[in-house]
Image (cartoon, rainbow, N blue to C red; front, top):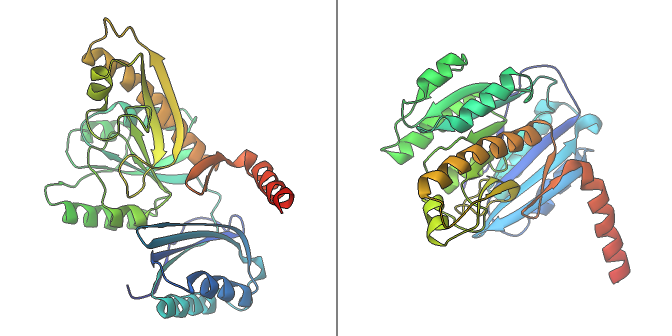
Amino acid sequence: MSGRVSQIRRAGGAGQHQARIRVAGPDHKGIIAAVTGYLSKSNLNIIDIDQRILDDYLVMNMVVDMRGLRGTLPAFLKGLQQVAQAIRMEITYTPPRPTGPKRLALLVTREPHCAEEILQRIRRGVIKAQVAVMIGNQPDLKPLARRFRVPFVHIPSENKSRHEQQMLKRLDREHIDLIVLARYMQILSPEFVFHYEGKIINIHPSLLPAFPGPRAYEQAFNKGVEYVGVTAHFVTAELDTGPIICQEAARINKSRATIPELIRIGQRLERDVLARAVTLFVNDRLVLRRGRVIDSRHEHEMQEKTKEFYRTSV
C-alpha cells in the first residue's frame, strides 16, 4: 500500500477544535511512533487514541486538539502526507466538526420498516440528523424516499465490486458521518468497511453472538428459543461480530409461536433498536474502546477505574 492522506471536507462553521486522524494499512514496526511523533512535532495534543489489528491490518483512530498547531493547516497536511508515504499507510484527516446536524446514508434493500422509522423520527425532531441519501441495491424503496424527500439512488449489486465502488463514490461526495444498514441484505467487503470503520451501524435479527448470519429468525425458531431479540452493532470485517451498541428482546410462547410471528415481533424490535442506536451515535454518546462500545458519559469514569487498576496492580 502506497501512503496517502485523504481529507474529508465538511460544510458549515468551525465547530469544536477536535480533528480526527485515522491510520489504516498493513501492520509493521514504527507506525505509531512516526504518526505520534509528527503530531508532537506539530505541537498538537492527542486527546484520545484507539487501535486494533485484524489479520495483520492496523486501524488507529485519534482525536487531536488542533488549537496548538504550529504553522498552517496546508503545511501540516503536506507533512502528514510525507509521513503516510514513509510508513506506507493511508491516513485520513477529518477536520473539526461543524455545528450542523450529522449526515446519514441509509442503505436498504426491500424491507421498509427500519428506514421508515428513522425517517419518521428525524421528521419529528427525535433524531437530530439529516439523511443525505438513500441507496438501494433494489429499487423497491424509492417511493419511501420520495415521500420523505430524500434522494434515492439505485445501485444494482449483481457486480459486487462495481456496486461498492459506486456507493463509495456517492458516500464520499455526500460527506457522510454515519452509514445505516436499514435491512440492507448485502455483505460489505472488508475494504468497504475499513473505509468507514466505526461509522457503519447494522441491525441484526438476533441477540448476538447467538444466531449470526442469514435466516436468524429461522435459526432461533429451530432451536426453540423463549425470547426473540435483535442487536444493533457496529460493522466490522467479520460478519455479525462487531461491537454491540444495544439489544432488545421479547418473550414468546415457543409451543405456539411460528416463524412468521417471530419475524413480526422481531421487525417491531428492529425498528426501535436501530433508531435508538442511530440516536446515540448522532448525540455523540458512543465511544469504541478495544472492541467494545461504551457510553461517552461514562468514559471518564472508566478511564479513572483503569488507571486505578494499574496503580494497584504494580
